[in-house]
Image 1 (spheres, helix red, strand yellow):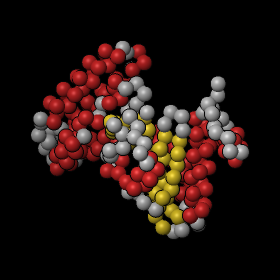
Image 2 (image 1 turned 90 degrees about the vertical axis):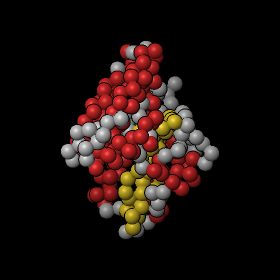
Image 3 (image 1 turned 180 degrees about the vertical axis):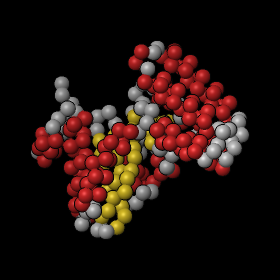
Image 4 (image 1 turned 45 degrees about the vertical axis):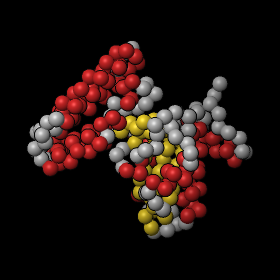
Length: 230
């Protein structure tokens, strides 16, 4: 129902490739491709369309789910950049609003559905008022213009308890690969890149199901699905 995705650079045969990660509550899939374009996700997803897609504002990630939840961590950084550029009309209030939304998300377990719905309505009203304000710098103007185009994608997580406010899980899933790239300089063959992605997928999925890396690899090599513990 909910899929989060992110990507990072990879080096294959001395060329720039990209490592993608897609994760849900039960599985993680890594793939390494020579493109950062939408065709990579099109090929993997086929006709599959999750209820909610969690990602940053990168265009290739758009339109993947029935709804989209933008990563608020990325938006907080964008807002801070606009603040640092001197904007006083939109960015400071937007930054404060995002922090308020994140705080509500952390309290979801103790809040009733009706209360969460009220909070989301309030966040939407506050956002409308902010968007009516005039940014004072070019960075603030660009940020406000971008948010107007995706204003319905900010607070899906407030009323959907199974949706995270950020795609930080994806960034954590990619971190070992970033370290690997910096230490080794990348892959010397396409075969090596694809094998690494397959192994990373099996190990990460196994851990998500409560299995060790060794057990997950053994099950995969034996052709058995990695099942959640009873």
